[in-house]
Structure formats: C-alpha cells, structure tokens
Amino acid sequence: SRLDGVAPAFLHFSCGLVPFRSRVCCPAAQLFGKMALVGAAASSADRSRPASQSPVQVAWSKTQELLDYVEEAPRRLSFMCMVGGAAITVNAAFDVLDVFEVFDATIYYAVHCYLFFFGLVTCVTELHPESTPQLYETLSSVQTWMHEWARGLTTLWGRGLFHIFQGTLAVLSSGSIGLGILIGVYMMVMGVLYVLLHIRGAPKLRATTDDYIHLGR
Image (cartoon, rainbow, N blue to C red; front, side, top):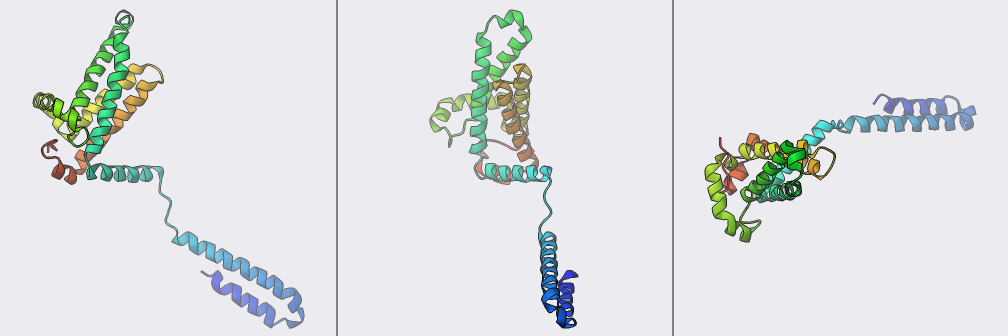
C-alpha cells in the first residue's frame, strides 16, 4: 500500500527536522501515522477478503451440499418423499370425507380424490428396505406391480416430475394459505431434487440402488 511508506516518512520528517517543536509535532505525526497504518491494514484486509456471494450463488451452493448429502444415502430422499406423500394423503383425506363438497365444488373434490390416490402411490413408490424394512416387506409386491405399470416412477426425472405435479395440485387446490400449500411446496422441492439428481448424473445413486431405481438415460 502507498500509505505504508508515507506514514513513517512523515513521522521521521516531523520529528527530525523540527526538533524545537517535538512536543507538539510528534504527537500529531504519531497520530497521523497510526491512522495511516490502520487505513492501510484495512484496505489490505479488504483486498484479501473474498467477494461476498450473491443470494443465488449461496442458494446453489446449499443445493449442491444437499444433493451430496442425498447421494451419500439415497434412502434419505426416499424417506422424505414418503413422509410428504403421507402428509398429502392425510390432508386430502379430510377433504374427501367432506362429501358435501361434491355439490359445492365438484372439481376441487375430484382433485382432492386424485391427491389422495397420488399420496398413496408416493408412499408405496418411495418405500425403501433400509428405511422401513417391515413395511417394505409387506408392500414390496405392490411396489413391484406399480413400477411395472408406471415405469416412469423408476427413473429420477419421472419421479421428480410426478412429485412436482402433485405438489402443484396440492398448492392450487388449497385455495387459501394453509397446510396444503406447505405440503405442496415441500413436495415440489423434493421433485426438483430428483430432477437435479438426474441432470447431475448421480453416480453414487446409480451404484447403490441399481435394484431400486434407474436413471432412465
């Protein structure tokens, strides 16, 4: 920094060339020197400090960390999606039990019936032997049958689009701010994670779950 040499030179000049004013000038020169050195240190620290990341960069960095976390153990994402599917099923069940909605809002009632069915499909599809071994053993035959008839659910991108679709339906059918919107947004996030894993390639997911899910490339 240019100020690194200016402050000592000014201090030497003030204290050496004007000795009869040393008691007045030296304190002032010392103060100036300290201020200059502090300013130089601050500017040097600013140059060495990395540029602050934008919110988009921070969000993408966190997303990459989450994807790495999921790839280490794919059952984690499956379990989170299964919880979301159960939440959609329970939330839609209350609306389905309201039979008077058939006459007041037929379309919404039909959508809630679809959501109830989609929630059950999600729960069965996302069953994993390491997360829920007993439940998986009970419903493994149903899961196999379902994957034969809906092969899109055996791919990352297909499963992701399915979760995004049902999440969108949950948000649009909620009407007002409530639990349905939160569940719908949650499922859409899970679907986006699946799609990102497909785009990324998910090598660890391919290596650990060949008998469970296919990349569909």
